[in-house]
Image 1: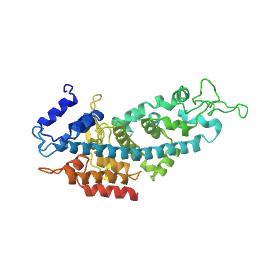
Image 2: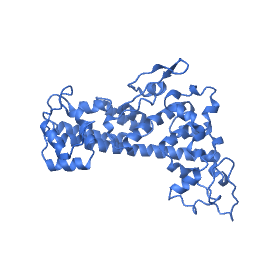
Image 3: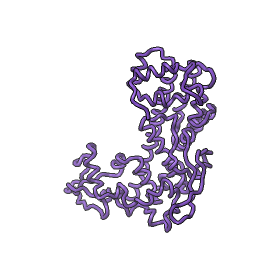
Image 4: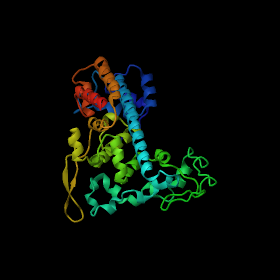
Length: 372
């Protein structure tokens, strides 16, 4: 922990460390408008000449920090655009296929809130611990089926109450045209039983985390069709669900404006061997056995922690990520042109931190995703 420092104090500290700052006014303005950690602390390990000793600069300038920060914002913004495309496809696929199977009649509009239409993993598996990645991210998925958001008796009341775009008059069945009786076990609107909201509207309000859980619970007849929309086959179900975990990690990082060049997936998110093999991933934490507190037996903990490069490989299974080439190429070029190299290669450090120090392999990843 460090005490609070004013921008002027931060300027003085950096000056004593010999960082070249051409324009103090520009420095003050930039730091006041941007998070100091994301600009300076998050990038200093890339720009400190000797990372084993004190923070003393040689040829480095504040402009170098700004350039890295601007790159990170641009790169992260483009990743968010790609993630948005994927998420839109996922929401559309789920709502389309669930509707075609269970909600194809007006009177069945709310069947997506009926737990009987989903797969209760806890009831299906004799030993729930056998469910994939149970001892990591999926234990909660299995255990909390009955508490799933869509099964809440108040779901429809909350949905209409919290979202202005869901107008009661618009989403109301006219009793003069049709007599509507809410199906058994489905959510109903307290104020007016004739108000119903179709899944393709409701699904837009669900968090990505809720979508993940929903995919785990989807019956085979629906999830198989969703998999087909992403060029996968039924046997790819577990792998697909695991990729959603990885993509969710990336989404959360970008959405919270954290430095994407520092990105790593959580060590709590296990990676299945089939996904590691398919994409030639290199998790930082290897598969291991861990002693259980209760029973004294050992449980298997899957490999975990993916860097940015490997995470983008996962995203590239479904989306064209070639638009990331432009911001990366731009910062590589600018660093070559403006960074005064002394004892290290800044581009090497940047790419290494992002998961692969070989620029050629980044270009190959972009090309491959475009071809997919």
